[in-house]
Length: 208
Image (cartoon, rainbow, N blue to C red):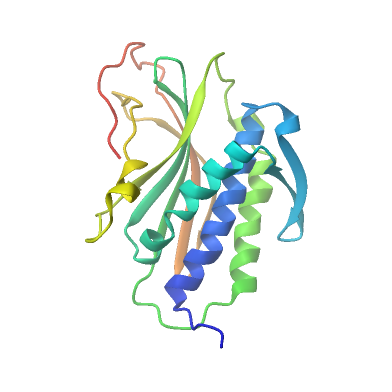
């Protein structure tokens, strides 16, 4: 018998699957790895790039899928793909701001939800002109920002949440990419870049 899923569980499941593809698309877009580290696949009736290197695909899958129970509970505020230089100073952030309506009780139409999320992948595929070149020796990570941490998470789940990247001292420059607003899921995707007046040396570690 197929297990019943609440609207929040169903929306989170579709979103996490989408996020894995979206994060991979962002990493491909930024050219951090050789193109041979990716292969083309179909997803949501469009061609996307999928990581074929085991460590790369494993990191993206484990980080994003680890957020599933927290997204279902509505405690995840943002998920970021952060690119930073050798000094751990963020150079660019792709920010996914999300909200799952915990009081929504109607059935989720998976096809409609996937259609809305597909538009994000289309926008990502043509957003290279909005991004900025990365310096040599840059690295990246997936970071989650929580509204609150639920009770009962174990130490292993906590380990991937902290980050050593550093804070910008001024509000970032924000470039919207795509947004959707429907029940039970709302999602925004935008870019953050450091303000031109941002000092070159940073000392404050970032907390997530």
